[in-house]
Image (cartoon, rainbow, N blue to C red; front, side, top):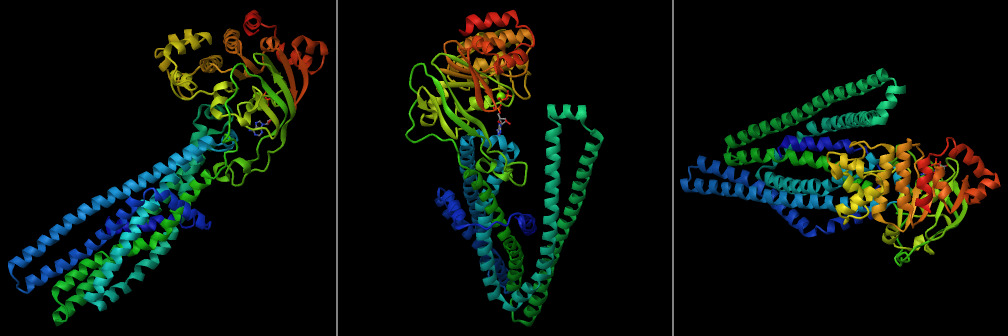
Amino acid sequence: MSMETTAWHALYSTRFAQQDKRPFSRATLVRILRFARGHRRSLLAFLGFSSALALLTVATPLLAGRVVNAITGGAAVRTVVVLSSVIALIAVAEAATGLLTRWLSARIGEGLILDLRTAVYDHVQRLPVAFFTRTRTGALVSRLNNDVIGAQRAFSNTLSQVVSNLVTLLATLVVMLQLSWQITLLTLALLPLFVLPARRMGARFARLERERADHNAAMGNQMTERFSAPGATLVKLFGRPEEESAEFARRAGRVRDIGIRTAMVQHLFISSLTLVSALALALVYGLGGYYALRGTLDPGTVVSLALLLTRLYAPLTSLAGARVEVMSALVSFQRVFEVLDLKPLIDEKPDAVPVPEGPVSVEFDDVRFAYPSAEKVSLASLEDVATLDTRGGEEVLHGVSFRAEPGAMVALVGSSGAGKSTVASLAPRLYDADSGTVRIGGTDVRDVTAESLRRTLGMVTQDGHLFHETIRANLLLPRPEATDDELWDALRRARLDGLIATLPEGLDTVVGERGYRLSGGERQRLTIARLLLAQPRVVILDEATAHLDSTSEAAVQEALAEALAGRTSVVIAHRLSTVRAADLILVLESGRIVERGTHEELLALGGRYEQLYRTQFSERPPLPAEEEAAVPGLR
Ligand SMILES: Nc1ncnc2c1ncn2[C@@H]1O[C@H](COP(=O)(O)OP(=O)(O)OP(=O)(O)O)[C@@H](O)[C@H]1O
Ligand SMILES: [Mg+2]
């Protein structure tokens, strides 16, 4: 690295200077060391080789001085040849050591990235759903990318720079002082000329950099928000495109201005460094030449001093920025540790048991539940706000009890916001109840293994999410080993085989966010096909609220009949046909079960169910297909 770029790098890194002022505890350092421990051998070898490399760089200027003395002193040709051969050998050794240290530092750095990334990914995957409902995906992904990389910089770049710069600096200074302490001290006296203005420029640069980062982030947000299909639609319907464009242009303009200013600050910095070192060099030549003419210094020493000088300024400026660089790396470590420290609220017990074999019941026993408050599950820095909102924690379910017998179907009805989806999310342990018990096959869900719970229980959520992957990959999620025949069988039973067969790429068609757009009903049937493939013993189904056209509705209905046949099921029902087929209907209002019974019983009761029946389920007469599909299939 040339002197200019090293020094520039030092200045550049000051942008982190005021970023974060949290004190670093010993515990953080200990943790970092624990991560580094796996690379201990490489680290030691690396430090040894970088020191050797630094020492080698001092040797060449000294030998060059000897060559000059040999020439001026009229020594034998042999001496010059030997000296220059040694210089050549050192150059080769330098190149080889350089290669080795680079390899070692890359190994350590990339190895550390690997360790941290896998640790964070692993951990984040185990965090509760509540965490993801509060976190901005972008912020989280940036932790995994930027901060992890920032953290490894401490080990590869900073560490190597500090070590090799210190060794270079010390060796160079010692040698220079020995050659001529007067000249050395004088050249060092020039240093403040450069360092003081550089500090001020550094502060200015840091301010500009931060402002630029803010503007870039704001523009990025504006683009991702507005350029998504729903965002773009919203702007077309209600937005003010001219004002949005103007705001965007204002920020982009500011980024341009900052870009120009930064370029100038950068140039000023580098040219002032070049100037100061050129002045110092002139001083060495002038003063050294004067001493040489007076005979107190030989010409070779002047050459050695001049060559050494060029290796003095770079480590000095670089070390000036090292503290800042170390701090920024520590900040990155701390931000990574912050994520690793989030507690997975829902975890498997060490003595967890598998769910009992055979048909199982699902049972809620006086279950109370409040969505966890923000500080329990999240980090303010991962949400969109500066401080965590303190809301939440209000009880949503107030003592819900019911039992779905093995093989029976329980329907959950109630107005929007009553807590139906919440009830559904407790069985697969997306959340845990605050008090009371959720049992599956008679065992508390908190006592069973996560793997057996996943295998026993299948859930279709209200939004029926699909990954942006092929239909095949989406279907294979619960059973990666399923054959194509099994896939087609599931698709057939979900009444989706006809459609998929007509797609040009069949099972390899990409669906999800930006792929082939499936209609609401088709999407639902695909999630049902996934469920059929998984063959769970218990099905939790959150029916989509969106009304489907009559053909899709009938198809979904048939698919559901297939999915629920012979299984214990809890269905959040928005369709009359589903409700009528249920063995037990629960009416949930404001987190409490207010009525329970069969369709006929509840209608006869003339209460909340009858009201719901009239408003929610019977806006239109039931379709014949609905009735047909429901009755034989579901019972
Ligand atoms: N992640 C969450 N964090 C905090 N509160 C939530 C969360 N999800 C839902 N709620 C609240 O819990 C209550 C019950 O919501 P739930 O989604 O269970 O209703 P629902 O009966 O499924 O309604 P719908 O029929 O509209 O789907 C609502 O008041 C809702 O605002
Ligand atoms: Mg819901």
